[in-house]
Length: 237
Ligand SMILES: C[S@@+](CC[C@H](N)C(=O)[O-])C[C@H]1O[C@@H](n2cnc3c(N)ncnc32)[C@H](O)[C@@H]1O
Image (cartoon, rainbow, N blue to C red):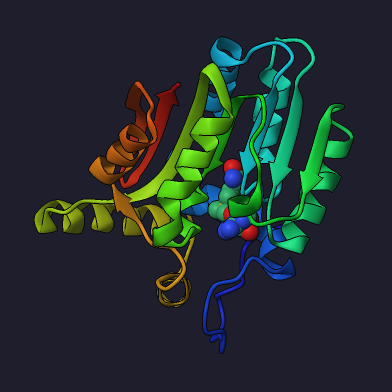
């Protein structure tokens, strides 16, 4: 369904992942996030290389389940379970519905990802989710994930990022704005969504992400993909 949520004046205060958003999420994310499909393709490549037999995959902030599908449909290993977690009830519902006919070994958990105990994980993905986590909780979340990963397991993080350099930040924001315009969003839709999401989507710089991964103990972390102000990181335990 096409995203028209912000096409008229709205009286919402903050952006929330409710039924309205769940219904149009796939269209919204494709028209708002440059490189979204490539992020998913990269997850498909990563699962082939880094997954291990008899281990769990975690999809954190699963929304409608696109990442779980990329993990499940490209997996070539044996005896893996996908655990898709989202704390928004409507997203968890939609995720379950989308995965049911396509995957066999999965579980959808409606919970805060900060309360999850990660166990026997070979792949953990935070695809566009860390940016919604309280800044003070981000390091402990990555620390917990690290503890739950088996040796050689990986954490994949995709995020909107910012640049500390003002000039670079302005340049990249302008390109992102034009990406949304080119995908059919009006000035009203863009400005209303920006105002609502400002308090709930808090970006980090690329350096902050890589540093957080290092502090958690990841021996190797790289930025394996970037499109404008969106980047994906791969960290190996
Ligand atoms: C931008 S969407 C993620 C997109 C999805 N991972 C994908 O690949 O298409 C962010 C999701 O994170 C969820 N979320 C935000 N904070 C969360 C938290 N603390 N615990 C669990 N889920 C959370 C939201 O409900 C939303 O569905």
